[in-house]
Image (cartoon, rainbow, N blue to C red; front, side):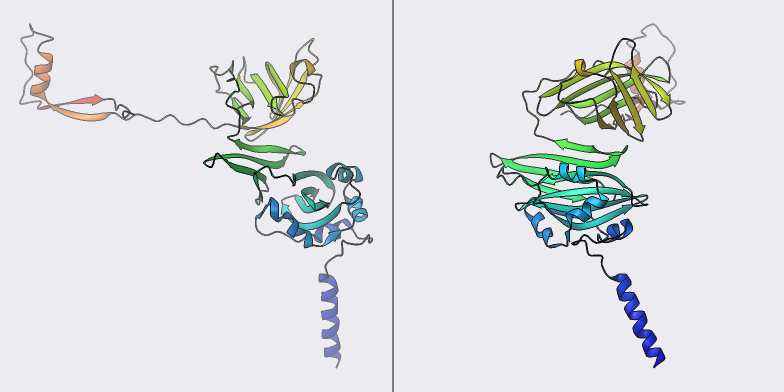
Length: 360
């Protein structure tokens, strides 16, 4: 009888322990309980814009409860201060010392996909609205996908003239204490755009950080070797908001440590910090650079280093020609030379001919 009672007690304790935390009510729960209430996503997440609302059948999140773990000012900015917003938990992604919480905010049947980031001690770090359904028929098909890195991809595409596929793909990741664009691919750029001339393109790029860092062909920074290994020349160009914000800056940056540099010239109020993280450079405007750019944007972004294609090594073709033919080829050049090459000793001669590329 005692054994039977003990078994019942163990079952009850286990059921209480595994009971999912209710997020729909403003209950006094701990940060670790709030985070654990989001189901762990073992696989990649993907959805299309028209199917986001079907995730709204997931458990609701009480707004007051949410504001206890995510700053109220952040929630208002993500939802445009809409008081009728309803939140739904989707899941969580864990990576090293970071925990990403995915959830929906729905206003008048218009869903937005939001991610909030916490550290392993459940301290809030950052949030981003990844995608909001426009509700308009712009003929684009939107796809949202999240891998295990995690990188958050938003892809849109449409067919023009029943044959041409137009697309834009953005990839976001958390780097340098904020969410930044790490992937941008598009074929929707206007054919009327004037080609850009990179004034540093032909200069040496042998030092550690030299190279081209790009977001696309209108937003990039080129870095070339300076006078020493601690100095670099750079050319920065931005073209955002469909040409509404354009800026350029050319100058010299100096390393302040192994992973950061600064642009600061005497008499110039514009100051820019550069951070290097593997193949990504992050720039942040510190001074006043308004005379170098439009007033509605800043020199503040991240760019990925462009790979330089390896040069193909052209291998020569080895052709063996009979020595008699070589003698005939050379004899017109030396008509007075009485010495003749011995056909018995050397019967063939090896000639190297560079391999020519095939005709197009």
